[in-house]
Length: 133
Image (tube, rainbow, N blue to C red; front, side, top):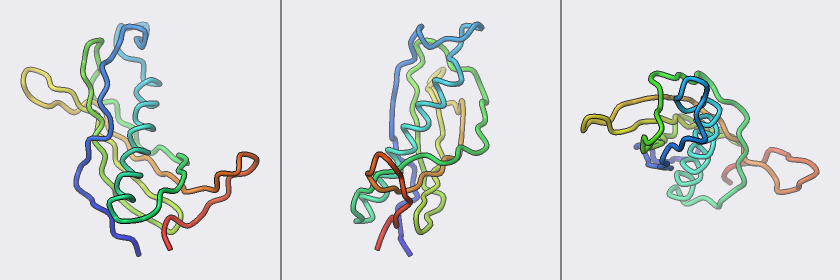
């Protein structure tokens, strides 16, 4: 069994730009999902490295229970915090919390659970591999 840190980790921080807006003038959900996927992978790799395990290529296989709690606006500096929720033989599940500071306080905007699987680097075929020995 692998033991990884479970405390929150700042995996990504981004400034939201006008090019990423939807028809309502807020940040398009697909853009947020892309950042969530990137942040989750960064957080998963960070946790595995801290636990002393060799880096393995990770691919997302599931994004569960994405909750868009509040709109994200152009100009928001958004933090993507990650926390490892579960580690299996070939997979790792990470919670991603998206937040921004508004009126001097951190405000949660979106949250999601993302599962990644370690795979081979072969481009023709991606076969799951063990995360750890």
